[in-house]
Image (cartoon, rainbow, N blue to C red; front, side):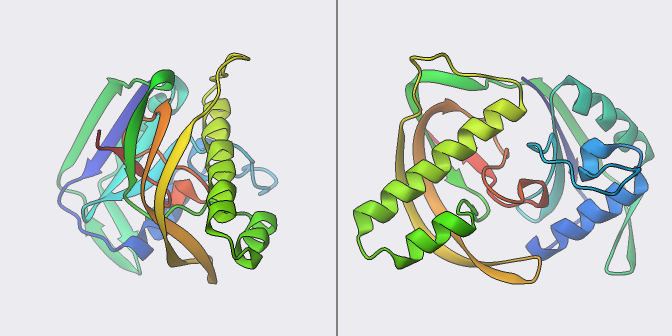
Length: 221
């Protein structure tokens, strides 16, 4: 899978500022719906796995592009991005570090260990209620496995990758709850590690609001 990573090396941001960076870039390149995932004519949200995602790596902001077409959009961002505006403050972009690679992606017989660099928001309104009302830890674990399996399959589909009929996602989770704030609403996120028989390139997101930096993963084993 083609992947590009643009690091803004001279800038430090806080986690809650990543969505403001996304908003600024989305407005700057309003004609590219791959960035903001809204129809430029109607303003309606386009439901798909985000091919351009905004992350915080350490304290440095980063923009990740996935697939050939998103990497092509990236070239324009790279050339034109000389400053960003966060909280009414204009910050010059003095250093840009761009890396383009063919990253391994997809089903494998081997399992890999990943950790969440940012909280995973994997529960929707329906399964969150089932999770919160359940007092059995094993059943809660199964709900989280089901949710994450769905997230992995949704990511794969969004990147035009489909599993064969005999291929099944296998997961082992070691997560803990972490309160998060998403669009002004308090929600439960999760941090920790998981094993899965699927190759996920570093910094890709799983779950809700991955374009805003949530659910970013990194391979550790």
